[in-house]
Amino acid sequence: MQRKRLEPYIFLLALLARLVVFFLAVSGFFLVGEGQVQANLAENIVSGRGFMLSESMFHDPDPRRDASLEFFRETGGFYGVLLPEKPTSFLVPGFALFEALIFAVAGIGNLTAVVGVQLVLGLLTVFLGMRIASRFLSGWWYTAAGVFIALDPFELYFQAVPATQALFSLLFVAGLLFSLRYLEKPRLANGIVAGFVWGVTFLVRPAALPMVAWLAVMVLAAGKFAIKLLPSILVLLVSFAVVLVPWVLRNRNTMGRYQLLPLQGGVQMWEYNGRIFTDAFLDEAEGARLLYGPVRQVWLPRLNQAELAEFPVFTTETEFQRDSVLYSRQSSFLKANPLVFLHLSACRFAEFFKPFPLNHFSPVHTMLGLLSFFWVGVFFFAGMLLLTRKGRVGVYTAGVIAGYILMHLLTASGTPHRVALDVPLIIASLVAVKYSFERFKAGKSSL
Image (cartoon, rainbow, N blue to C red; front, side):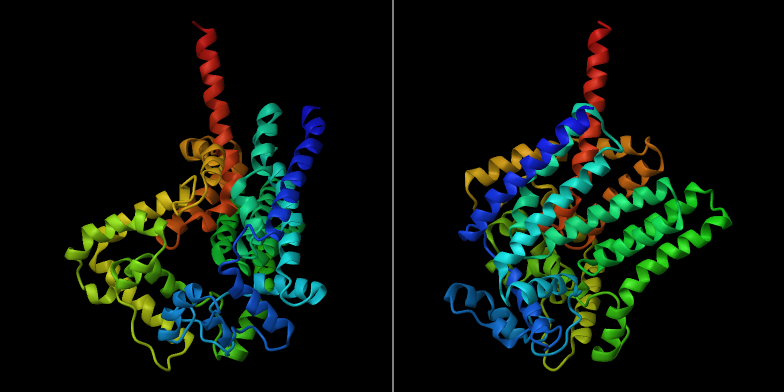
């Protein structure tokens, strides 16, 4: 009864918060940042030029922003790899297609419309997140989960920025919910829906890929690897693959090779590893220097094969060749410096779970982050362990959390990467808080 009575108020709270954020966004309170790249890709799709970046993105009328683009101009590629005025597979196309659809209706370049749609979809994220929470929490604990999910300042911030995070969060939470339904009832229809949603999620960010594999393993394990479950697993994987076939075929036709994953693995390895030991790091934002500066100071004099940390000189290489060279060089660099990799991974853990921005922001940002997320960093691990006691849906959810975190500790990490995991992290942490409260209450009553 309490759940049904209070849910409308939680959704009203979520709506009011998003209305406030929308008006702040319209007033220019939030920076667009790298959302301009996706917007340019979307504009080119709508105008019929295809999935490519314009040469104009290498220049900015603002001298300060233009200076930050100098590295891209020197290397001949955005991020050093993405070549302008050519079909690209550096990024997956999901968010650009999403923006292109909005531009086709609301006008090319209408980022206000994109933000408005994202905030509306944010209400759906809250709804789906609460459906997940209802599987693990009840009563006031369920209500608390709803409030934290509805008012998550990190979700609200990224819903106000026209970039991949908001759409990916929605799809990631939807993928998790439909996966839990599939585990509860491993029917063909549930497998089709789960596979389809994870496929669409992959097209926004490839981090969805391991979640499908983990789901297939969980379904098989739940059925004690019975042969009769194979058709259901096959349907799951096929529905996931069908969504991705057009992307793979497009790459074959335009790039000359079958390709599923975007060509950014190499440059991400460089940005989060080798770059820290180059002069390019000196131009980093304050937060990055604060977190990774001590690593640079400790290890720079002791690096093995330090030349591999430098960004290579490229001339006429394709995106694939550039990514391959970067991946090979960074792999060799990390093999030669394994302790550096461990130190950087520890920093990435801190960056993933930091409850407030390390760059210069107002005290309001810091306080909102502390109040909403600090406690999650304290309780999430215990919550993951407790989730494993709640049957296969709990084991799958705990595995999704653990796998997602590990994936980003090994590659790229930060609040933009973490925000999609906020819903399951909040739920897991509340499970741990509830358990601690009940144990404390039981111990107190026995005195």
